[in-house]
Length: 200
Image (cartoon, rainbow, N blue to C red; front, top):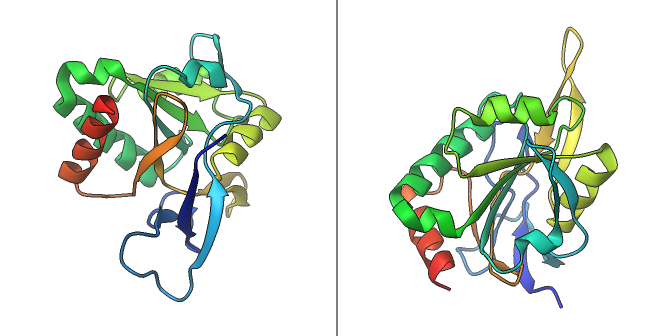
């Protein structure tokens, strides 16, 4: 059975990369009145995506090794590159322990984020970070499994950006949610969480 956690789901989301994390643990300080407390399942369920080398990745690939999972998109102007740069710092701090993690960047914009585009984009960050994409339906299923909010938003002059939540999910060896890292969480705190994930 997938792990159930009481979390606070925030009304704030990210327009192409602007606001803070959309979920935090209920054990943290009391949330503003604009937040709603609910019990949801994070992770588990079917997963069927493809990495930058064209290899299929399913939920079975997340079993036996802790995972760090972040949903975003390569055309994101601020939040995604900021988060991936932070992840690069965290992974460098872990040293050899970084090899003990699955680290995945899952696009929420599969129409533009092909395996080739993801590979090019992620070349600027730590090589442990593995890009995943798929069909619109496959990406939608993955986002649903992790309670990730995302929505296409039209921009002036044509084209679009993406609203999306910003949480980094830390999953244990059994594929259950162990912890989260919020947007712009202090690096020392994030690294401590990753060390606990590796050791757990």
